[in-house]
Image (cartoon, rainbow, N blue to C red; front, side):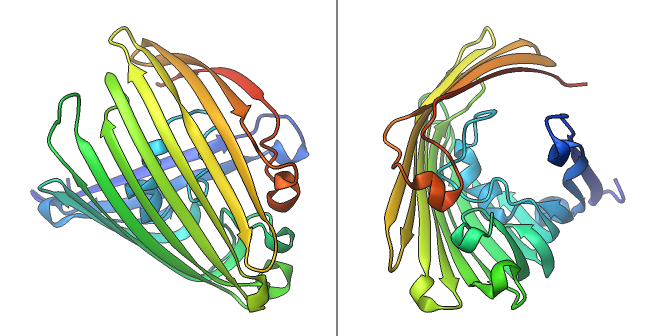
Length: 291
């Protein structure tokens, strides 16, 4: 605590190299921020992290280890130069973020012209508002909405193809991922405005989650994820998958899991337009110990 009513906090996370290739031999910052907690007046933090829409809206379906979040845009948008104010009370959750001008920032859904989801941003902001009820039968119900926007620098990657984008999101969740049933649905859309208006396009997705956590530490999660790339003067392609995840908390500090992703109708040319190959069924397993 800094005073009786004000406290400081900090967080640091890194991605560790896995040795699978030259591009993976690195030790990169994942999230890194510092902040001040003013108690009933909210929190203020700055550093590298995702915007308000992820934290307050779309994260409700981010419940998998490896094969989730294809129907939402922002879970990978960890950006430098972020400032966030958050406040919660009486069941209300409010967040607002502002992103300063930074080069080579991740923008999920920025696929056009081979951008590979990396753009030079001039500025960005997002606001998100949610309300969580007291327990209803097996848990609380959360209703959340968010809006964000970003402007792209004139010298953006790919010759300045991108001008700006608008981001819309809504979610509904019921229960907890800890013990008992958990249900969630997320909708997210990013409307990209290009320098040439004829090249404008929209990406949107839906994620649904059905999960159950047992008191012995076993949890099972599955659902449905749909993502769509719709060019204003071009084609529309869909990706559709079903993820399945089983986790076992052996101890409070150690858990193991197995996960799979099954294609259930992805268009043949989805990969060529978006860079995501969802047509193959994939599998993974892992373990984690938290110190």
